[in-house]
Amino acid sequence: MTNVHRRSMVSYIIKPLFVILLLCGLFGIVWLRSNFTSVEYTISELENKKADRLREAKMLMAEKASLMSMHKVEKTAVRDLGLVFPDRKKVTYVKEKNPGPQKASLETLSGWDRRKAMVN
Image 1 (cartoon, rainbow, N blue to C red):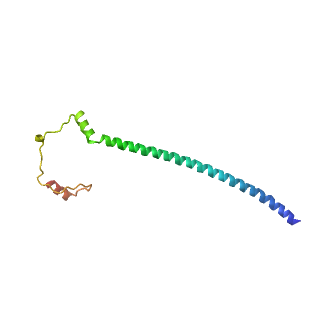
Image 2 (image 1 turned 90 degrees about the vertical axis):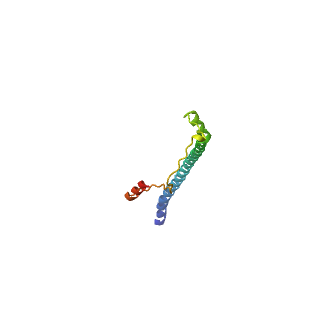
Image 3 (image 1 turned 120 degrees about the horizontal axis):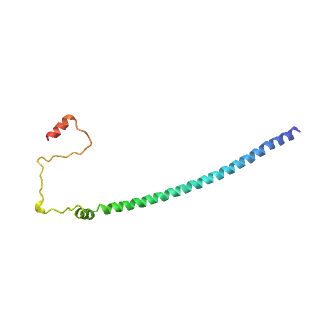
């Protein structure tokens, strides 16, 4: 009699726990699926934005190339600024007295080096 009574108590405890576990698993699967779908939509939107930005970058590079072309610069200089090409006779070449190696750097000169550079 106690055995039957024990089984019925165990079944009263196990069955509701099993149903609760089954419902939690089902809701968990639905929740994961909805999150997966929202992530897919987000990825799709980001890919579209990336494609738009790449297209815009290509258009800007083409525009930059057209604006920087020598023909365009020359035409703008002549038309807007009034610049003209000099005659060969008017060009003066200036020769440097002591052409030495040139150094371009971001280093600062110490006091001794600065004085030496001023002398040269």
